[in-house]
Amino acid sequence: MLCLIDIGVFNFINKDLANPALDILMHFMTKLASGEFIFTLGVILAVLGGREKKLSGVLLLAGLTLSYFSVEFLKAAVALPRPFIPIPDARLIIPQAAGYSFPSGHAVTIFMAASIL
Image (cartoon, rainbow, N blue to C red; front, side, top):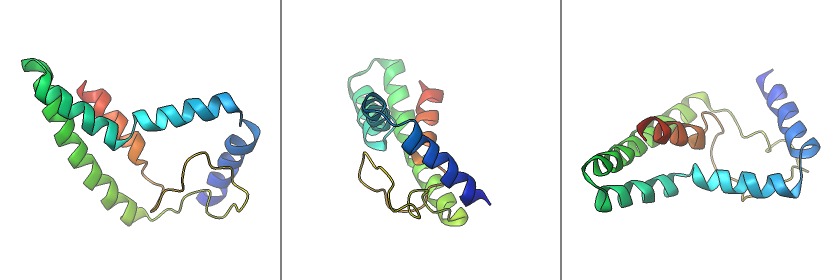
């Protein structure tokens, strides 16, 4: 049942709402919520920031590590496939991600970073 809902929502967004402006925006937002971006931000803050910013940088790095392992554990436990897998004509604007879809690593990463900052 959940997979049918995922496919319906995916098709609505992927086909009905698709446009070049949203493609650019979503690609940018995906990069901002990536572990690589948050890691780089954490290192910059930890190395170059003042006392409070250094602490924020260290917390970002610790939070990123904790969230990564938590997400990977939960993904293995839930094992929900990515919605585009059963859809052969899915329109992908970034390379296919490996692994399971839930929980979203990007959502967890950006929530963690927003909570710290």
